[in-house]
Each structure stands twice: as C-alpha cells, then as structure tokens.
Image (cartoon, rainbow, N blue to C red; front, side, top):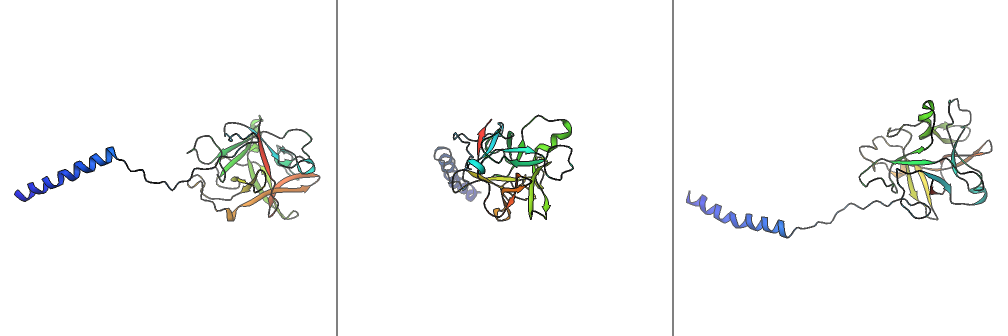
Length: 223
C-alpha cells in the first residue's frame, strides 16, 4: 500500500505538467494539406459554383468563340444535346454554364484539378432538364474520338466528371477524367487516365471532343 501511495505521488507532477503544457503551450504541428488553387475568371475573381459563366476561347478570330448548347450530329435526342464552340469570337455569346464541384470542404469555390460537373444554366422544359449536364458520348469511329454532349447526371460516377487545369500559356483547359468513386475520393482520379478536351470539325461546326493534343484553351466570364 505504501508503494502504491508513493507511485501516485510520483505521477501527480507529470499529470499536472502535462496538463499545464498542453493548455498554455500548444504545439501547432505542420499540416501536409496544400490549400487548393482557385480557378479565376477573366477579371481575376474566383469562380463561384453559385454563379453562371461563359466559357470563351482565349484566342481571337477563327480560333475564338464561346461554347454553346446546340444540336449534336445524327442525334435522336428530343432536346439539343451538342456541346459546340462558335467559329469566331465575333458573334453571339455562348450558353451560360455552372460548375458543380465534387467537394464542398472549401465553400462554393471552384478549384484547379477538382473533379466537377458542368451544366448549361438555362431554363428548359421538364423533358429536357437532363439535357443540360455535360458528359462524354460514345466512341465515334468516323471521327476516331468521342464528342462531348449533354444528358449526364450530377454526381453520377460515369461519363460526366471533368477538371479545370491551368494552361502553360494564357488560360485553362478542360480534362475529362473517368472515375468510379469521385464522391468518396474527390481527388482520387489519376490525370494519366484523363483526356484533354479540344475541338473537331463536323458539318461546319466546332464540336468539343476528346483529343490527344492541342486542347481548347479557355477562360471564364461571369454572366
């Protein structure tokens, strides 16, 4: 019993010291988490998932032009389902677009390399509601690639996850990233399996499609 009493007395200073040190001298360990880099619009403001934007080409003239919702070639859809770029920056504005991020840990911002859904932000009939969300269509053997189209589902782990990546030149470009569990692991997709988004000419229109080289370089302008 005497030994037990002495042991308790020995432990009291350790407990008191530990409690005092913890409350008055907290240790801030360095964090391994790197804050995400926000995507910026043309004026330099951070993109906001609650707002709408035009996707515009960073080039002028024949290589310019906004992205808009139009008719996809040979489609039997009841609603417009093509993701198309105007042939020139001299012309109408594109269709407003919303970006819907896969993670809300950092608020409503949209960040580089974040998996996200893209949606044409327009009023539409109930029949066409699903034809506002971007996805990648099936392989087109005549083009040797896959066109972007609408008809996706927000949050579905299939053909509708994209990323915004900083370009080495002026703006950004889009990646299509096939993943299976983006909601569980929103940063789990490996860019080695992603495809760049560019344009292909079809029936006189510039359709957004998956490309190996020369992605469409874009910037964003709030509507």
